[in-house]
Image (cartoon, one colour):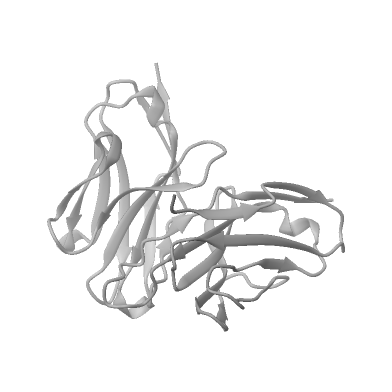
Length: 116
Length: 114
């Protein structure tokens, strides 16, 4: 089954304790992205990756890191989480920038993070 | 730059009534347009998409949307609301210049009353 898998789905942590949210897709997609969703603000892009070893900042990258060492994986790293990073996080993937791509995104189920 | 405006962060309708969720976009080149739905405690699911074929697009669960270039709009409609339609709906735009990136509106929460 084609899917985007995120882990963990739920996490409560404390300020300053490094954490990683993993994301994996099995559709051979070039493009992967992380979003955070907050009430009233919709979806805001954190980072995206056009392909392996190519990443770039989205609209709200502060406090986050990413890496794309393999095509299928795109982990989101919070080096020193703070309470303002409490949010619902989504990983998504798409075919990419090729001629046949429309940009349609496939989403994971979400990871709800609480930073105390 | 691409952007999406969803008019109305909350829409309430009675069961059986028409659903109309508004979306206006800005794009410098012909766009691709999407509606996604998010049910409680779930991820986003594609409802329908416009990719420069027919301007009236039919999606899942009886929803449809019409691309109107002159109005830069892509409003989502459903003739008769069902309780199960209660969810948050997001409009999004992309085009070839954005290299695969989608730009989302802020979402519209649809409530359906019995």
